[in-house]
Image (tube, rainbow, N blue to C red):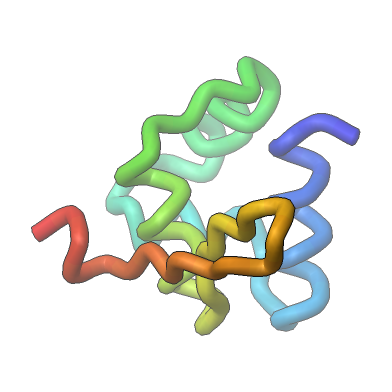
Length: 75
């Protein structure tokens, strides 16, 4: 599953639309759709998307160690 598909699924689970995400990023809906088609996101954008839907971005090691990455990490 492509990253954009996962982002779309997350938006759906949280009752949000691509248009809502575009407004959050202050870009047009078409621009956001183009980004999703290209499937290109910076780390900062991923953190911002996850924050937008009220979720967390977590890196989990094979031994279960978890590191949470938040919006404050990109400020």
